[in-house]
Length: 121
Image (cartoon, rainbow, N blue to C red; front, side):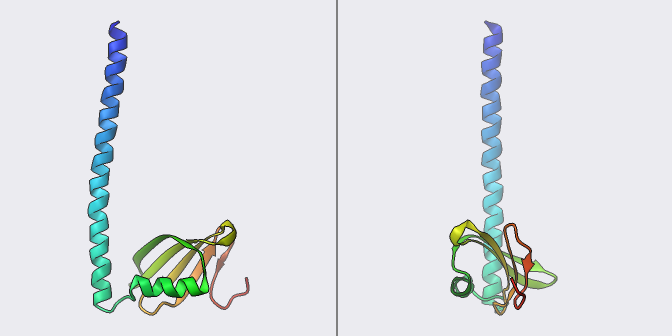
């Protein structure tokens, strides 16, 4: 009987610890998301990057598909949007876009080599 209680207690305690870790992780993620949002907003207000809406309109014209993820990062001192798209036929595409002027810097398609604008595909 005591081994059953010990096993149940261990499961309960493990579940409680896992729940607490998930809750703490959510708070940390939420705080990081807020900081990222503030950083992106400040960059747009300063004129360092184009608004995401402008970038997405351009992407939709040239590379139609469903946007799955968007990141705004600094790479070698420049702001770069990284956009993941799910394209017709199930192809996953990752675009790198210069955030200041919207220039496509390159893209990758799943199971394909990296392409640069002007290269043959």
